[in-house]
Image (cartoon, rainbow, N blue to C red):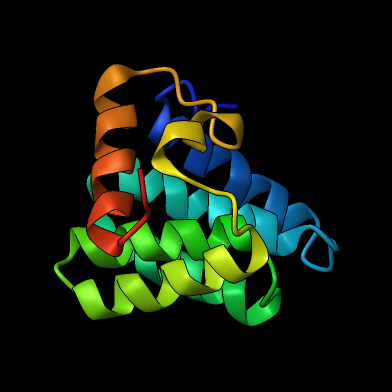
Length: 127
């Protein structure tokens, strides 16, 4: 929730604490992806990519982690890598579009919504 509310540093702190308490948690990839997402919105795209890569290695079919990876790669200028990650997303969720992005990502801040959609547009997400 902290990520969607725009409280990125608080989110990273809380998620880090949760990961330290439960390193064998079956949802660990979700926590890694959320950390990556928080870094993305905080303007730290290289860290977002790092965390998203960890998440997809741990859980290769976790499409939200692939979204974070696509957005992060787009933000660092790796358009080819962003496109590759987005193709993985669309194999898992072929109906995802910019127009329905909010169903999976309930981002509150307009600037964050625009940043997220812009990066995924660069990655190749259709309208």
